Length: 130
Image (cartoon, rainbow, N blue to C red; front, side, top):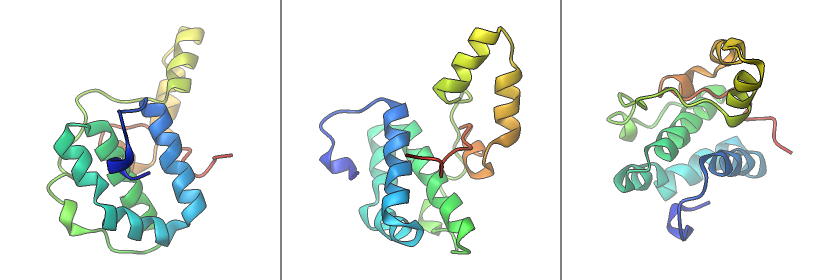
């Protein structure tokens, strides 16, 4: 999804899902190329959409690592940023609330993909999309 095609900001859960589906549909290398060509990471940052910016950068870095592709140094200034508060998937927050325990959050942190965790985003299921 190209940021310039968006009429308004969607929910973050919907955004994450659309990115994961884009990776699955395009394939890793085409996703990397398209993301770099569209430069949505920079557009999101300039709009102040930091969650989307850092999520997409984390996905780009993760997919690059999985494919032994060097990371794009054009985003090095953003790699030192992180969200103020840890961002958990809605399902993890719900499980913690229902169980009355932080165990689901602790487990999710332990299983988080390092590229996402660097930005204070807990994510582990980027390939498991239907």
